[in-house]
Each structure stands twice: as structure tokens, then as C-alpha cells.
Length: 380
Ligand code: SF4
Image (cartoon, rainbow, N blue to C red; front, side, top):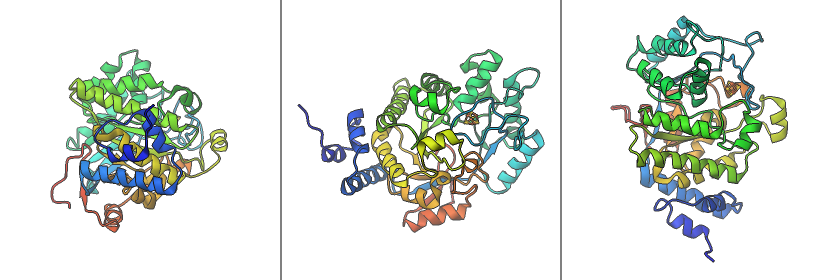
């Protein structure tokens, strides 16, 4: 019988692909001295893979509507169209936010929204989404548009009775430059049946992201952690992301996953049933940090960029995560609604100076990047 030891795993981290059993063994550790060794191994691997520099992106979120036909159990953002607090930005409002973002130095607009069945032009959902893209890209073709999750892509395909590939191709041609890897939550259909029963299942999420890669649209990848999922389900999620990237590499697809972002669950203002079941309002930082380190070790050479969420963890928590395997502190966002409406304490906007200061306090250099991790010149 082969006995797996933590030391043996950590000594060879980065040289081979951890098995799910090994990943789970790391994730289940509770001894502070062993957890410290896992942190060190993740930090060392980060340094080997991408160096000491911490990157950030100057971007703006635009959540064009919170009207949504679905009812995810963690979501405090969604509204019915006739409810208090529902909103739906018009073209002029989106344009004004984009102009403001450009004036503040943004290189990226990140656009996502609720699934609003009324959002159509000439009876077609796709026409509406293309119009959103055009509002931004016709005036600011230089902006990187990181837009529309796999769930939104499937929503358009379903409403218009067209294929996923047709939707992605049309959005890409209109000017979408990359796809957020959100709506992944945890890629386990039992977890999804509680968290987001109306959303696409795991297989469909993976199929849509693989299709994006095939069609030349890069994606990010995420995990919503710290609610009802088990450590085994967390590792299985990482395994699926790693396999997805391995498939893209093996088949030489023109696009890949650019980064992994851990999104710890914030329950403070989330709908009560899930909040009660989880039993806490804010993420447990130590759990998020251990998972951050294990994600670095598990995703290994396949996904070298790792980002914590300052919205979920606060800037101090995100700064801490930079010593647990992360190499990027994310974006300025300029306005964050989705997690803030769930009671997150991290804030809705971060100045470049705030991000740079947090990185400098760790004694590490900082560097502005674009969405696809190309270094922006003269900003260091
Ligand atoms: S998470 Fe997205 S799809 Fe789910 S209810 Fe909220 S806005 Fe709708």
C-alpha cells in the first residue's frame, strides 16, 4: 500500500499533477504548522511560476440590470421587474459609465447582468446583447470587453432557440474579448440543486467554456466557496477546471483560462434559507486562505494566475491571500453591486493607489496588467 505524506506532496509541488486524493489530504489539514507548510509551498510555487510581482487591472463593472428570471439561493442582487430596487440601465447610462471609466484610466469593462426575458430587440435576445456590446465598442474599440457569463450565453441561446456556438461567435464578432468564468459556483450538480437549481448544470457550464476556448474567446475561472459544499466537492471542482484547461492545451484551442478567482460566500444579506443553513455572515478567512493555497498547488502549471476577491475578503484579507499563492489583486471595479448587496464589507471600488499600497506593504513590486495579463508599460 502506498502511503501519501504531506511532505512528499509539498516537496514535489509543481513537478506533477496532484491527484484528487492528495488535494483532499491537503485541504483537510487542521494542524497550524502543517497549514503553514502548505502556505509556504503555494507561495514558493507562485514565485517559481510567475515571480514576485503582483498585478492589477484598472477596470469597471457594469451590471446592466438586476431583473432576473432566476432565484439563486445565495443571490441578494436579483429583483423581479416590478419590485422595489429593480433597475435596467439604458444605453445612455451605460455610455456615461463607460466614458467615466475611460477618463479614470480603465482598460477593461466587465459587463454582466440578470437574466431579463424582456431584454430583446426585434424579438431577439441576442440583438439586445449585441447592442450592449456596440454601445461600448463603437466609441471605445480599445477597451477590453470582458462580458457575459456561460449562464448568460445559455440564456440567450435558449430564448432565441439557437446554439451556444452561434451566440459566442456573434458576441465575439460584435466585440466581446473574453468571458467571465462566473456562474460556475461549485461544479457539482448536488450543490447546484440547492444553490442555483435553475442555472445550467456542471456539464453545460464546462461545455460552454470549452466552446469559448475553441472559438478563440479566453475565459476566467471561479469557485464560490464556503457555503454547503464539502472539501471533496471543492477538489472535484478544481479537477474539472484543470481538466478543462488540459483539454484546451492538448487540442491547441486558440484560447484558454487566464486565471482562477476564489469567491468566498458572503451571507450577511443573502436570502435567509441559505444564510441560516450556512450559519455565518462573512467568509472564514482561514478556510479561504487554505483553499487558495491548495488551488495554486492543484491547478499547478495549467492556470498560473490566481486572484483573491477584495470585495469578499476585504483588502486586508486579499492582501493576506497574496502570501498564500495569489499573484494578482484584481481590479479597481469602480462599482460593485452583486456581492455588496449580499452584505460584503470589502467595498465597491478600489483606487489604483489603494491596490498599490496594499501590495507595497508586503514588500512586493506591483504592475498594471491588461485583462489577458499583458503587462502595461511604464506603470510600475
Ligand atoms: S446569481 Fe445571477 S442568475 Fe442567479 S438569481 Fe442572481 S442574477 Fe439571477
